[in-house]
Image (cartoon, rainbow, N blue to C red; front, side, top):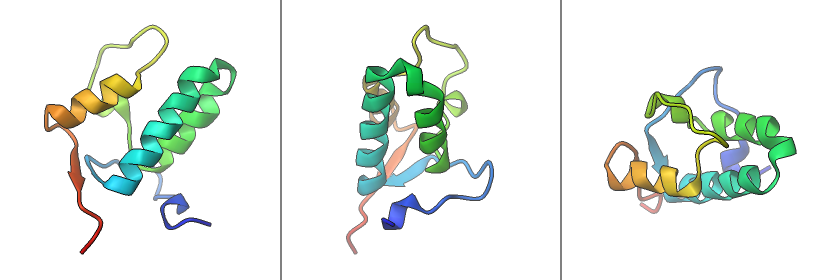
Length: 86
């Protein structure tokens, strides 16, 4: 099990992620976009990492949020990426 696969407490929401978590979330969003039949299952994995898109955007998007939406949240400083190398 990877260090970041540890499940958070229920509803533990975050707005700060490590660069590793960011990369993992991006990969999961790509999977979600490519496989709509598994969207709910993949979204659960994303939420287990502490990311809830609804915490940042109240409007629902047809087809769900995208990698570009996630990156925009970072660019707009709504999500912070901290360096996981200390």
